[in-house]
Length: 485
Image (cartoon, rainbow, N blue to C red):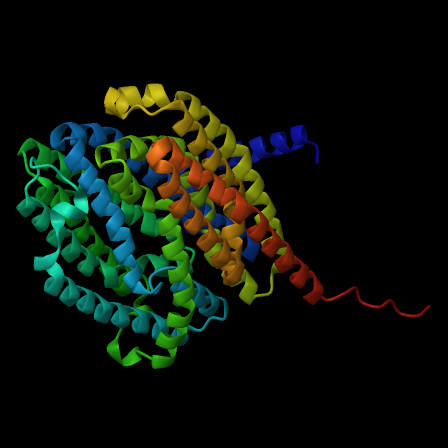
């Protein structure tokens, strides 16, 4: 189909959807009415999830525009850098879930849903939940033992303006909230596995609103870092408890995690599958979350603000592409269980085209506007060099182009090439970042990210996708023989 004709057809479809959403009855049907065609129903649910993700992201961006300058001016660059570093460290501590709350659980539940096996789904949920409770208790005890010997000032390299007591209280609060959240966080996997991810995003929106309100309260009453933790991370815990009640009592009561449903076979399978995802999580943290720690140690915590603020703007299309394609992970798993490879191939091509056509031009526009936006948003102290913006744009464009490949490999559980590409990219990001940061500064860190991704993701993931489709074509039944005349 010519590009112009495709654009006209796409515009007509978008206009039709918008017209439907503008009518109350049409919007209600879109939200609640299932489609008899399995492929269209997957698209409908993925579209709802992506739309809710974009609304949640818009709220996050709005919150950031309000909270970042407010928090920087309120805490100062050093203490705000400490907060960003703590957030990055918490991502690393989250690996203690062994992948049980993420795609491992989504994969097994999607397969059980495709096979209409509720008992198997219940066993997996109960096994994951109580295993996470045990892990959370062990992490809490280990932290309590190590708490008094942690060199807080050495870890964060702060000046005398920030007290050791404040750092210790902040660390204790962050860890306590993490322990509470760990077992409850699997509720998102339930929504995603049933292709109801938009519900998880709606609850996330509620939690974001609670954080924003808490931030205003803390800044008004001049609280410190511990109070900031309570406002941003503590208040959403109450929203999470309401979310868990809604999921297990009202929406999926057959999945309530009764201890009697725990199965060691389910735990072993989840740990085996989750172990692969944990390796990918560790690698992803090296790619996406190591920069704050590298910059803190190699350049200084005040420079973290410049990098993070620039990244939030320039890499926004990467977040949008992820949110738009993530709902297809569970859809791919369910379609694979039903052997619907025709839909999988079509969906992969359509979503890849949409990601590139929308994400790359948006990234270019944001890169052009990054410096004036940051000047208005966070002040002159956070304005980056042009080279930092350009390398982050290249990194973003590569990620947008290859986003759907990773989602497909995850959905159909082809994890070996995905893991390999992530591990190699993480090694490149960390090692090259450490090598280039002292001499090239923040631009060297961004250069490490872009180069590492293009030399690892591009050849490994695309080759793996082609092999998946070739294997699916080989398994497809051939044409029926014609009867003899």
